[in-house]
Image (cartoon, rainbow, N blue to C red; front, side):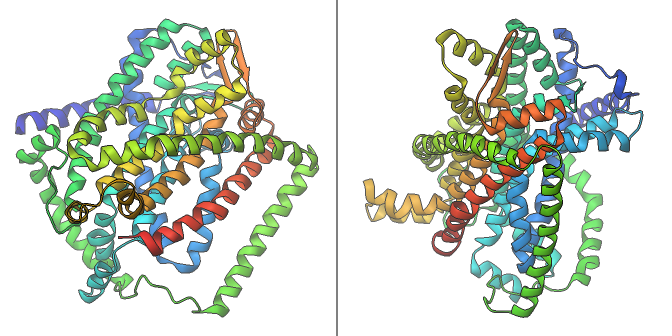
Length: 558
């Protein structure tokens, strides 16, 4: 075991060292290649480059999640700003971030490919972070009161409480949503590696840019090869990383009786039997002790999670006034810029396009709920089914569905199906999995003692769903629903405009509007499109999802 684990670590370090020169290669924007070679012999190198970007974005997403979600859950005033900002960030499509950040990153690392690499990683990060942040925030807000009281009785510092209570209690939903976010980021890999913004085209070596080049050439054979390599990559990542993570996270499950069967991983068993992880972790223990002592300056975690409703009203008024002044000033500047360029009437056109895309999102959410909630409950509540179905679901959810868009485009053209209808299916391929994964996580997180009680009382049929299953998974479904809705809006930028060879299909909708504005570098229209999309997403969250969040916290939290 020790030899195998050591060999794997050496191979990983060697691969990273070999990749390092390519990450910092010379780069001139005016001479940068607009496409990569479609020679299949380059695919192993492209696959490794894409994996490095994906895991770099995952690490950044976890760090962001810990900081942002904790601040939103623990700081009462900050929550009123951070959650709406998170709604807006979730609603901004990947192309919206790219149009602003590509030039900034290139200027930050002049003459080096590292700037474009950072822009690509940041774009992938924007496809991962929001879902993980919502999930961790939900776990913090639904923390059992007895654990909160125990942390205060034991006089844990804020640092100790975070690592000994907050992170462990949110580990299972964080791992599941991290896995889902990682899979969702594959969907935007082509847009993140083959970048078309401001009338410039940049291509980084990777699977996404390879697929984009093959699709542009209309070569279905090369697209098929890319799909086969992606299937191998997705299965490999799930077997070597996500499966061990889901099995390891079971140690943090809080319940009074032992589960009948827990997820297992051969890779995790290898690591547990090897002494190498312990040897590597031993030098880090003094660092952890020093951090525990150093972080005592932040004080004790002595305040309850319950927040008095009428506390510090004067301060709240001044805080709300300052935030409102900043928002009004920013909105005024943006409106003045749009009025002086394309005119305020452009908002009316964009709002109508947004209504069309909104209709597609609603149809998608309803269909995904009806189909995937029963399936997710079935998978999550039966450990034997989970063992076999989870890898299949992971592969389906992680596979970048836009690699299949050329085949869908060919089918739409052959069958005469308008993309106005077909876009719903294409958006669903990238967004429906959020609901399924969260429902599976919720069903699998139901304590065994509650399941045994329902079985002992012979609660079955409709009553079992109404009184037990639906209330138990409700907080997880809300998290999945809000991220699925945001994912559907984001997916519209690639689902409402599809191309294959000489065939170019465009649907009526806000996603197509933003895609066209980004490709041509029309900043006023980009601003209008992103603003309108943010308005729709935030309004839906305020009217529906936030109310369901509060209901989940107050009535259905275990």
